[in-house]
Image (cartoon, rainbow, N blue to C red; front, side, top):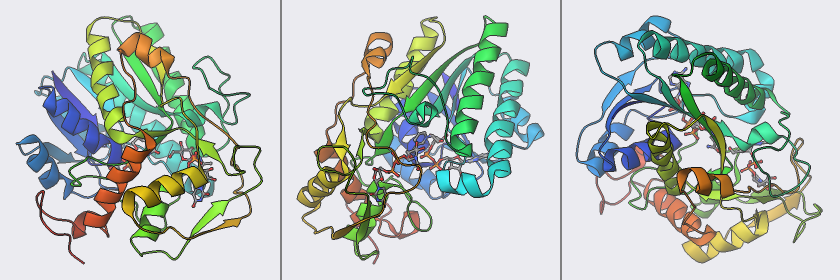
Length: 348
Ligand code: NAD
Ligand code: UD1
């Protein structure tokens, strides 16, 4: 198929592109590089054996989005493009509504106008807010706790309304738990700008010497060791699920919302220890106050993904830490720093 990948230069999108290309799909990538680097194109060329068709455009530009579909014979869309930082969304909610919801509306309009009826959408476990219990199933109540989460929930609802109104339009909402890790080549990975909000990139930056120590947000949660428990999922497993979701739509199945997690909870301190083992580096930390808005324990029931997509996570926390460290140690400052090809040395 010819697949339009929005946000294809980003962390998860770039990994999905490698998987999709490996399964023989032809890709058209679009990104405004608001949170990514055009340098990813060269890395994707190395990994897939061909230069990706990568367009710089903003989904808020309706005419540009429409232009991406014209004459390209797009069969399906995978929609990653979004702003994704929870704290940032609390400071500037309108930008999140405009970018995430506004951009999605343009995309859906262009899909309709060009008769494209298959969509895989990047949703998030954030739509469950603070769940009543774990593991979290897809039929758990949806309740959001921040503007970013609200955009994901609204986008799921918009997509759902479109599916209801048009039997020719079908979509899979993939609700990711906590994506981490990197392609095992170390050529692509997560490159957050500024101070990382999320645990794994922060741990990576401590291990590589960019930051002094990790602040562990709370040591008094009702969990195995008092620190927060999450369901970390290797980005390569996540990438595979997108190709599986496309196959699911091609087989003519109904629309669905599907959790993507391992079903295993890992505490902050368990992750730190796994990372120290994988990297051979110490990760100094101190326990500080809880982060506002955090919850004790969230992990998925991933059984629907297996039933509907035949998908299961294959990588454990050790592999996630190993690959995250491989990427970080080869690209200490992100894409600008890294080697041009596998085997090259990272710039200092
Ligand atoms: P990312 O920021 O690395 O990738 C998103 C990409 O979209 C970036 O390259 C950015 O430049 C681009 N983009 C943003 N707005 C755009 C616009 N208006 N027009 C064109 N391009 C635009 O983030 P990611 O971690 O790869 O996340 C991908 C998707 O998965 C997002 O929708 C995110 O909300 C969702 N998600 C991510 C996580 C996570 O922890 N990484 C968890 C759950 C869900
Ligand atoms: C966060 C987002 C969520 C998003 C997810 C994946 C919030 C409230 N939620 O979830 O919407 O879908 O990222 O991108 O931000 N931790 C530390 N020190 C740190 C960073 C994190 O101790 O410096 C702890 C947290 O308290 C938590 C765990 O590590 O227990 C994971 O945190 P994080 O990576 O930010 O993900 P979530 O909070 O699960």
